[in-house]
Every structure is written in C-alpha cells, then in structure tokens.
Length: 81
Image 1: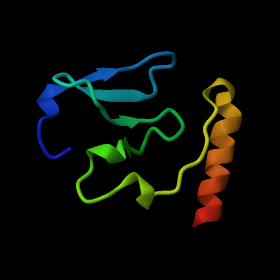
Image 2 (image 1 turned 180 degrees about the vertical axis):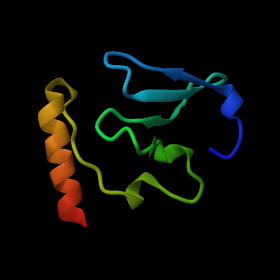
Image 3 (image 1 turned 30 degrees about the vertical axis):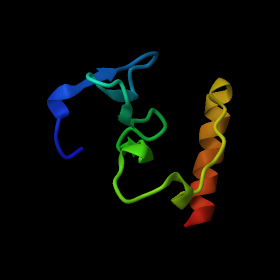
Image 4 (image 1 turned 90 degrees about the vertical axis):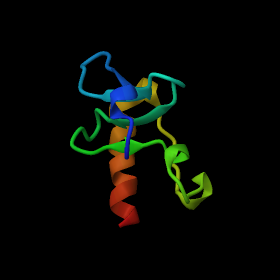
C-alpha cells in the first residue's frame, strides 16, 4: 500500500486473527493478514502494477475444511521452494 491507508476499512470475524482491509471508497479487498500466517500480508494481485494473475501459481483452498486446507497450502509452499 503506497498511499491511501486512511481510506481503508478493516474487517475481522470469528477469531479476529485475520485482518481484511478494504478500500472504503470502491470496496476492493486489497490486502489482509491471514489467519493461517498472521505475521505476513497477502495482497490481491489485481491491485499490483506490472503483474498479471497468470504470473502466479494458484492452489485450491477449501474454507469449509480450513485446518486441512492450511496444512495442504503449507505443504505446497514447502514443495515449491
């Protein structure tokens, strides 16, 4: 986030660990601190200049089975390194 932090709104739910940040003007979900790794920031790649979604590798994430999905995501990240 280069500018406009004063125009963001933060939403939390459940455990309040994840912090979802939205633009209060247009509503885009620009970035968040995820529950699975709250010391990091996940960024909506559509908010980045000079990159395309096709530049990234995507993994399925089943929110209904959150714990298992986090374990699978972490395993995928270890294998990608």
